[in-house]
Image (cartoon, rainbow, N blue to C red; front, side, top):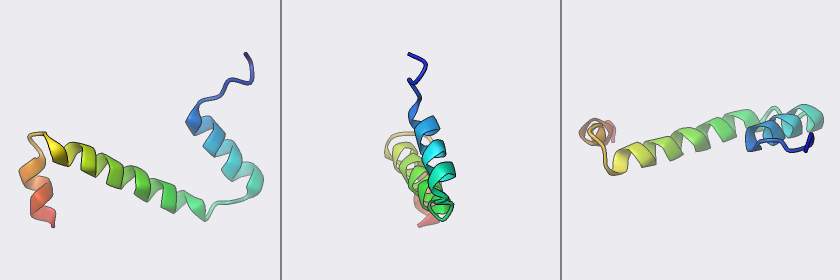
Amino acid sequence: MANNKSLIGEIWDFLRIKKAWWMTPVIIMIVLVGLLLIFGQSSALSPFIYALF
């Protein structure tokens, strides 16, 4: 059970070992767009998010 890592741990190890630091901004943008979609669907923040676009 010592090798049971979380998804974030696996991604961090991949970036560190493969020296794929160029993927970091891509992953950050995917996470931010995902959060924007989640909060934009049904929350009190919806009018403010829609005003951005």
